Image 1 (cartoon, rainbow, N blue to C red):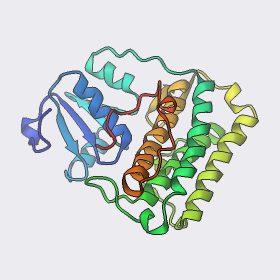
Image 2: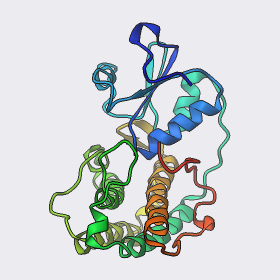
Image 3: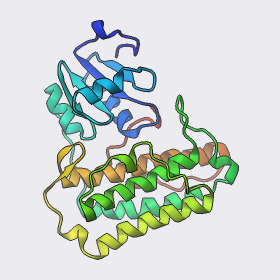
Length: 259
């Protein structure tokens, strides 16, 4: 991997655009690293021109990967593999198993958040990024909110999962209510049979995707942040871990906790 400091005129064929604390960015970087290729690592929080380059390519967010003059969103590793001309072998869990896993994860997440006191919720936890425990916990609920909105109303807006923190969610009680509310919305959609009549593919802000990939992405995205918060409670508060390895098995989680 090449340094973030590579200049625009010296950049290699491949660039990965990312920012600290972004789970999809971490997974993207790990996947490209595993291909054994040189690439430019572009932290968009440090490179003022990077996001403009992304927007100019027609993309709206990161992570993204560039190969020569072509760019792709990196939310689906299959799309990255196709761009780079490499193979990827990954068998997804069945949708029913993914939804069951999601239910348990979201219940355990509320237990994890409940271990923090109000002061701990304001602590910054992500290396090289100004993001608190509070913001990270709210983000998980926003992931669920975005998924339900996409399934129920066919919304494909990225705001609910990219840097948006509801300013009305302040206290621990607020966060727990937010997490329970978004979880209940997911359960209500399933109870109405939403998960029994899914199309094979669906439109997302990162293109037309297999529905199973969208579901898996929602589950593992929440699982990664739940894992981070779980380990923070163990390391900083001396608490017992809530989530065992069986809940992570089969999900394409990053190997590392943080970028």
